Image (cartoon, rainbow, N blue to C red):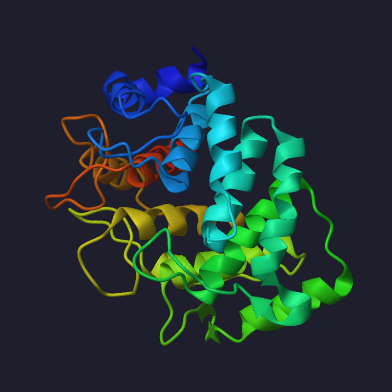
Length: 287
């Protein structure tokens, strides 16, 4: 057990968290955040992998999980799912298998043919993926696998992302924390260094802690907190009230070990659990 794991144990119940994740692994090597269901899926499996990786732990029965991800990424899979499968395979050190799925990704996402996610399909957030979300995940997959884009593709993606710029932030109808981070991450990955003041504008201190999707709103939620902290990190900045944000994240851990998205009632899932860990990881660096 590494030092990072021990550091996390000072703030959250890591043993309970690991029990929550491990109990939701199924025989096919996939994961489902609802333990009673055998409805294993790429999303939950990806976040289980990311949780183990962040904690410096081996994924149980790694080969089965590799096989699950590889076989699950099919033509009917949404862009986000294919990208998650590719990145997950990279984390599991199955780079050759990940490369085999790159052609599938480009069938759905090919900027050179103005295909910015054909059949957007399921979002990892709510409902249907936005074009910025699909682009963000496609870029993550290409970056993970070391795929080199040519200048024409980089420019096509840059121009596409910039269509969603609103002031110094990004969104479809109005700027949001999630889409601003997704856009800035994409642009940085393409070599275009831009900054946004949006992340500072959505920081909540006082009794709450956390971040919101839009300025001057409450309550804070985990997903904008995760994206805002990542955005600030990308811009080489840091949050103002570090300890208040740590307290906010700690308060989101449910009795079953997983994390919910808000201070209100909410169920645990793998996505929120990873985001809580990743956010805590960023914050602890600034204590």
